[in-house]
Image (cartoon, rainbow, N blue to C red; front, top):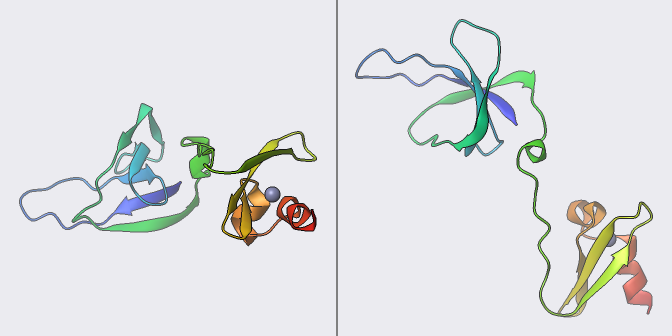
Length: 123
Ligand SMILES: [Zn+2]
């Protein structure tokens, strides 16, 4: 989540440019800060946001992770899938594609390799 100050120059009439609290891709809005105020007003439900044709600058104010509001759903892969339990008790899914394996753990998401995949190679 980031705080986006809208800086659109509206042609037709005066439209106030607020600060919007959006996901990093600016597609979902969780809340906004009204022009001239400082408090973040959160909506009861996130709304879709259309940034098309509008201009924004990202404020240095730090936002939360997108996942706080929009948790990534763990997609179950198709094909040969092996379930493994991580050291922290979490479950991961290893799926085979071609000659390699992919894993749903965070380590794999970042580095495209992890100890779960390494263990599969040794077998
Ligand atoms: Zn893994």
